[in-house]
Image (cartoon, rainbow, N blue to C red):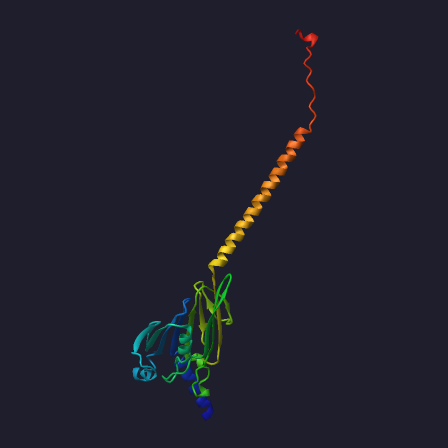
Length: 248
């Protein structure tokens, strides 16, 4: 009987606190080797107080409006002179905890660039850390935490290891963070190089030139064939003798 009551209470709490924590993390990787991120971590004001939120950060507490509801939280932004510094800071970044505390977001982060003749490829690899409630009776933590990770890199996204990643034409991949399980993140973007574009243009011009030469040769052969046919035609001699009956 007690167990049934406990299960019922857990189910009610899960419904009450569903989606009570929101987090948006925007990571930007620049082609010049610099980077930046902006993070907003907010809690539903119906269930959390400002003093609870302030325990997790030294940032000033702000109020946010999500779908007409009041949320409280904080925002953190930082610029970096190198990808290495960006990756190291992301590994130390703290995310959401349902008790107003925080847990790590990334276990590992690597950012690299691969140059080639036809362009440059940028690679972002990471592994996320699931949110631990410390209480298995709470069920799925995805019911409590809504977390999006937006990764923007130069060029267009050409490869993503995540089925649920949303890709746009501006080189940004949006990842739905799983609070229950570790997620392997792999995003690749590609930016066409100037040399590659030049070679493509040269190749197109070469093809056009070859086609033009072929057309000229074919037309010339056809013209010569017509001339030879005219030269080989038999022309009957003209009889200039006057017809005696013609009167002339």
